[in-house]
Length: 112
Length: 111
Image 1 (cartoon, helix red, strand yellow):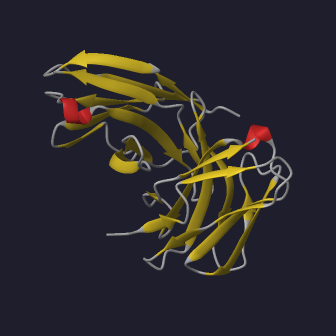
Image 2 (cartoon, rainbow over the protein chains, first blue to last red):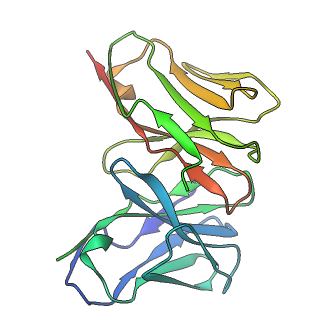
């Protein structure tokens, strides 16, 4: 079974802090994704990556950046956390196009 | 840009009933239509998926009906059970980068 592991289940950060969310997958998948999930809005794509050191903006990249130095690891960075970034963050991976996404269990981030 | 509309937002059904969740999309540039199931505290997981060259796909108690001309697809759960209580998301794939999710339906199956 594919395993996507997000390093933290819960995080509480202060406004203005730099926040790192880490994600690791163990199935050698090419593609990795970061989504945020908010009630009534579904899952919205923040960034995705097709390969090491490759990244593409999703629908809501403002205030975020990403890093993919190794194939198995994809990090989401909040450069200066704000209260409107309080959300559930979901990492996912997939082996290629038209393939199911395999999600981690999420990190619930609260910015105070 | 919302390209898929999912309804209803929430649904309560008695055990054994057939909940139906609908998704409607706005253009035809999609080639893969999955449904994901999410339990509390977990990430979404693929439940069932269909491609636009078929009108129906069944896996166990779960069925996707696809109407290409109407740009709609639906999830039906036969003989629903309390363990089916979860949030369900439809999604549209046009490429690995263009995966668009619906807003989700919170389903509750009453014993």
